[in-house]
Length: 79
Image (cartoon, rainbow, N blue to C red; front, top):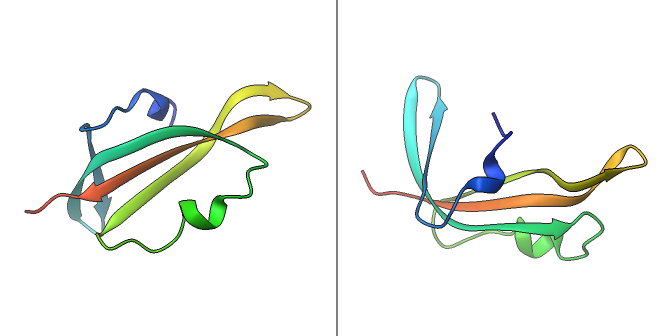
């Protein structure tokens, strides 16, 4: 499911299905963040708009872990 999220671009759409309902979100940002970043509070903090933040591993794999996290931010589109 998250295999190609690093290819999402600003303006792309993401569909989220919850309990039989579908919600559409538009990608606003897709960035690689160092896994040891101290800025996680900013990344997952509250937003004025209904937003989803997708986070998965990325970058180089070494010593059993990836050195980055791929962080995608998307805002819910109006129905």
